[in-house]
Image (tube, rainbow, N blue to C red):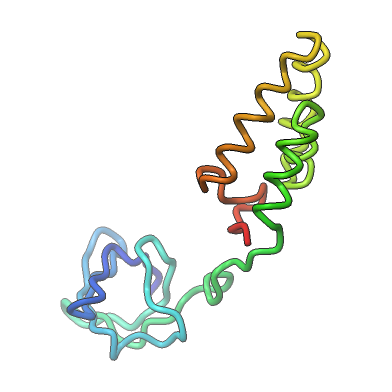
Length: 137
């Protein structure tokens, strides 16, 4: 069957899979993957009455996304070139970078404040993913 992980408790190593409006319990021994289950992971499994076995992740969920962009590079770009939106371009947010550049041009430089705020958000970890949803290094 195809379903989704509804919940998983690492302490008890037990969880629940939801499929077609039904719920199936499982133990980590029934899990067939190198990474632990996360809620909302799509899975394929064998169903019994109330339990799931031979639970396998579907496709892209086999590996968590790997970080490719650096948080501190983006933060320094935001601090020194934030008025141009350079840090947004670096992170892949092209439309937001253009908007930041337009705000700076329209406000005769006051858009630089936006870059400073983004630098603070990057340094504190509130902006922590690039445009593709990958974590920052």
